[in-house]
Amino acid sequence: MTPSAPAVAAVPALSAPYDFLARLVGLWSDGLGWVGERLGIAMLDYVFMHHALLVGALIAVMAPLIGTFLVHRQLALIGDALAHTAFAGVAVGLFVNSLLGTGISPYVTAIVVAVIAALAIELISETTDAYNDVSMAIVLSTGFALGAVLISLNTGGLAVGINQYLFGNLSTVSRENAVLLVVLFAIVALVVTVTYKQLLYVTFDETAARVAGVNVPWYNRLMTTLTALVVVGAMQIMGVILVAAMLVVPVAAAAQLARGFREALLASVVLAQIAVVAGITLSFNYNTTAGGTIVLVAVGVYIAAVLAGKAQSRRAGGSGDDPAPAPER
Amino acid sequence: MNGAPSPVDADRPPLVDARDLTFGYAAVPVVEDVTLRVDRGEYVGIVGPNGSGKSTLLRLLLGLHEPDSGSAELLGHPARAFAERERVGYVAQDVTEDEKRMPITVSEVVLMGRFPHAGFGRVTVEDRERVREALRTVGIEHLADRKITALSGGQRQRTYIARALAGEAELLVLDEPTVGVDAESVEAFFELLDGLVADGMTVLLVEHDIGAVIEHASRVVCLNREVYFDGDPAAFAESDALDRAYGTNIRREEGGIVT
Image (cartoon, rainbow over all chains, first blue to last red; front, side, top):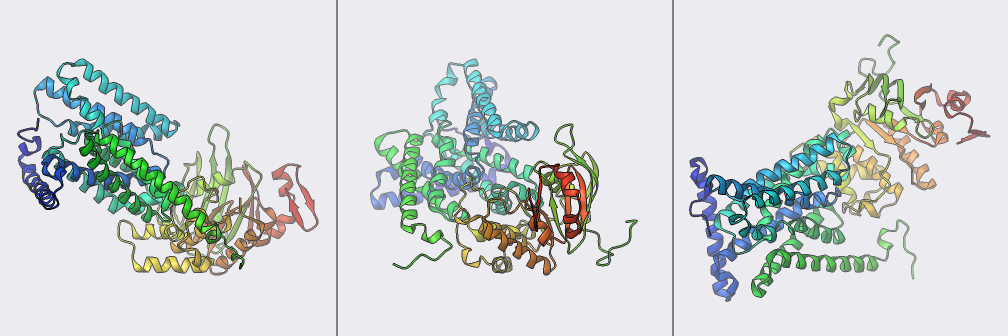
């Protein structure tokens, strides 16, 4: 099942950084194994669970980080659109591999195709008057159709492995996949850190951002490209169909509780971590699909956040938001 | 250029310099042949009926649209070049609407005024000090940690002014800032603008309340696709420009004009 020789390691220039990251993943694995042994947690006996938890934790930082910008720009559906094109990318990878006998990871082709689709979405909405969700709907269906056609072209061997991409799978997270995730995480975290102010300005008030000299189209493209990276990264355990939930649900929950934007970002990451760790644990113990379990936990967290937010504003009783001093009782 | 140089800052370019601007979203121009020059320290109020192209003119001056013909310069640069934009503060028309329930605090919004200065660098202690100062100037320092959606229209308006002040803007461009703000807050808002102008701010304001513009601005531009009047508020009140620009559905009353 696991690829014997990772494709990236074949390229000499990449082998040193790959080895370094692989060693880091190994250290994480050793650490978790040690913790599991000490505390008697059965789940931590397995190396694939170490990888799954690492990948999950990284996703639970990246997805809400990007999702916070998307949700507050009312682009919550873009994750869905890109996930479906990433599925086409997986199909392209599997197709090329079976045709030419190459060993390219389908995740790499998924990244390439999803990034192209991300730029296509931006281009369609920039050059036509089409409303953004129209361009997203078009890209979404095109991606899924392309994936379906490529798979049907070469049924037999191809259709067998497709379920893990549709629904996600904990046990297929290899060390190579974990390294890929670490790389994606580093890219996303670095880019958001550097461009945080510009992204926030564009998210909050696009016109004012343009007036202030921010290159809005460029940041829109950057945002969608980062979304594509996150979606492909998260696809591994969440699956194509549920991946968008990680971009949206923890963010929606955090928006119920937070006052400020930075606060909302932090809260969404914390809530996503809770959902991922609890979801993976439940999934392992009850043999349920990881993606679905994580999403259900996340939705549970969201409902709790809505109730907590309601209780919070009721306790404030409007007096905190009233400019006039509340009368004495 | 060929006229008499203005007495103040004769050697410095005007903040806004638009010549023969014509622009239309479709074939029919919304703004036609508009020439407008705003010098440092002026307080210009643009009035005109609904759909007269006031907001479009502002968008042209800010470089948000490419004119069909004519040219627009802002701060001595072509408007479309978006140069030195930290010197311009912009308050949009729809800021009092809150269909977006984005969690963000007042001080986070005001801090955005510092973003063009910070670029890709970190926000410094000095940036935060300027935010506090700007909040103090507009009198909402006590609301700094409040969620912006929890504010009244008037308070939100002040937040956006504070954002421009935090950015050290020299030119304040406001597009119908008093829409959705209660009457009492509107009066206080114009007093705030008066204070800023007294401190050297240049203001370009699009406003539907003609009475307020005549009372507060130092110059009135009456627009309905073309410029019908450009000059002193008192002379504007006496002239027939309003009747011509608005057509006949306008009443003149003792001491005030009501549309």
